[in-house]
Image (cartoon, rainbow, N blue to C red):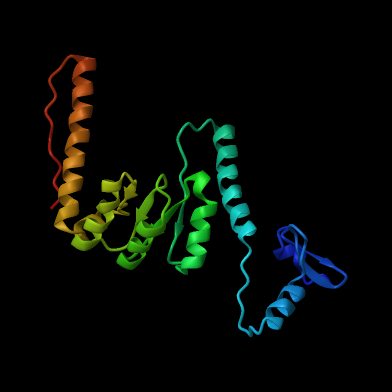
Length: 204
């Protein structure tokens, strides 16, 4: 019996002598790991984590994007973030951040509690993405990492999100849009030699 391992194993596990084994290092079997844990007096339920699998998945994400960049001639950058809503357990998050450090793998927060966790554990050179409803406190917290030189992103999915957001966010976005418009209009004026009027956007 192969337990359908070719379907779900992804070459991370294999069957030998009727035992499911981990395809890394000394290739321990799952049953032997459980038996050793029980000899130490620990009883279930037990959750086993394999750090090398986390590292493998992170490496695959970045390799896939690097291959796509090469294939399609894309010249932009790629930065991934892990959504903390999936698992906020500190031992997992610390391990994930350590393994993703050389890739600048960041964290994504959808609540104030997750954002505080992200600020505590995120890699210094990795971005923090802030999702969820953005009231004044969320915006203030979301902008705080930038004081420490950490990139924080506060995406808006649509115009409805903007209208529902806090006045603080509207002011920040308004200033950014005005600066962008001014830059574009100045560039057009230099190219075409004409004066261009800058119209400020309405955020109401």
